[in-house]
Length: 326
Ligand SMILES: Nc1ncnc2c1ncn2[C@@H]1O[C@H](COP(=O)(O)OP(=O)(O)OP(=O)(O)O)[C@@H](O)[C@H]1O
Ligand code: SF4
Ligand SMILES: [Mg+2]
Image (tube, rainbow, N blue to C red):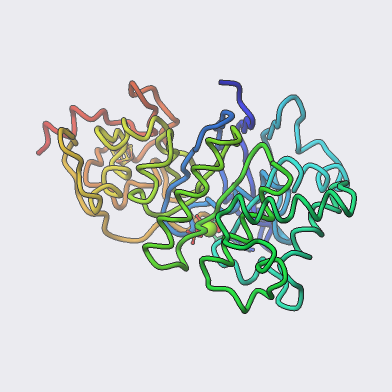
């Protein structure tokens, strides 16, 4: 399948009084039409800033310092602010953890969906029709009634559905979902996951699903990218990562996920300690202070992503060597 989005060597830094603090460090990935890529990692690993770099929505003080972000045949990093705004919403959309902040509390839901459609060139009449269609597509009962409601009249799950309706109303080629279910109870989380997965399948939309919980994405993501200290440390098919993680950090993240039948995983250790400050990384492998498999050679140089078939992992020590140590 063709790639909707191709990110190559993306680097982003926070500019501080004492210099640039790198927070995304040379991350590369692609998302195909109709594919879900999960981006997984602990708090502070750089998941959100990777997504905001792709969207062109970095907070003040943060800058992309290198790499490329290609959507089809355009490099988004080379576009001006106006062109970037046109791409956002029409072709790229993002949903966030807290649906309340994404909605205007003083505006009726229907007006908010219509506003997005009007901003992307739909006539008033077309926007009205598409609004009801989009509310229906995300499984909201009685779209006419929902369109007249204010956000506070809806449950948290319904508000997140409205946010998804706004995001997909323009039929974007790629949807980035940044932990959109963490504020919701487990049953509603499952419904939202299933909804986004259906929209992906029905419309051939690419999806990036960001989470700190590998268990959440097992069923919906075809591929997974694991981030640590601003870098991709393991990338591959989700099924392969689950069956045989090639980076000790992935193995640690999986420690709390029950193995499926037939899974053969290398030794799993719960990860102790804290992730490093991206502004003060230790020499060598950034995971070394917490790594149960660390060797002397890990202190010298930071490992790049290496081929560890069938996936790639940024670890100097191949899995058979871990197993021998146990
Ligand atoms: N607006 C900001 N100003 C300064 N530093 C920031 C800002 N946003 C993020 N950071 C820093 O950048 C690093 C990466 O943050 P990011 O929000 O991308 O992590 P994350 O993986 O999304 O974490 P979480 O799971 O908590 O959402 C962290 O060290 C964070 O403290
Ligand atoms: S390179 Fe060494 S310290 Fe880093 S993850 Fe691999 S074994 Fe652990
Ligand atoms: Mg985040």
